[in-house]
Length: 187
Image 1 (spheres, helix red, strand yellow):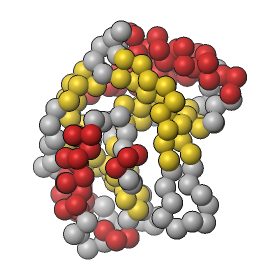
Image 2 (cartoon, one colour):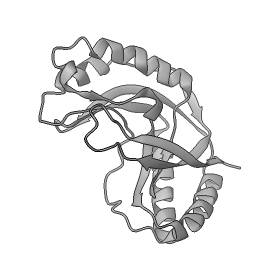
Image 3 (spheres, helix red, strand yellow):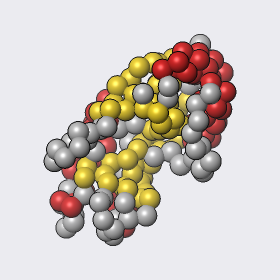
C-alpha cells in the first residue's frame, strides 16, 4: 500500500485557507491549475511510497514510538511558495523546527521498519494547493499568498495516511487519502 506520515490541519485552519484560495481563483491563469481538494490537505512528513503489507505493523509500532518522543507544538498556515512551475503550496509558521524534527524521526522510523524510500531531501513544511501539468508562472499566486497568516493551532497528532491514486483517464480525478493510523504526540 502507498503510505506517508503526515500532520493534518484542523478544520478551522482548512476553512481559513479555503477562503484565501478563493481569491487566487480570480487570477488570470487559475483555470489552468489543478486545485487540490480541501479534504486532502496535509503536511507530508515522510513519503514512504509502496510499503509491503508485512512491513506495516513494524512501521506502525515505530511511528507510535516516534509520536511519543515528540510533544505537541504550535503551527499556523502562512504564506506560500512553489516548487518550480509545477506545484503551488501554502506554508507553515510557528514551531517549524519541531515539525522538522518530527519529520526526521518519522523518516528514520520508516527506514528502521524496512521501508525503502528516498528521503534525502531538505524538509520544507508545505501543503500542496495546486498542481500544473505544464510550466506556468506561479509567482503571482505566491505573491498573493505572501500576506496570508492563519490562526495558530496545536499539532497534537501524527498520522499514517494511505494514498489511493486517482482513476486513470477520468478527468478531474484526484488522489484519495485515508488515515490508517494516528498517534498523539507526547503520550
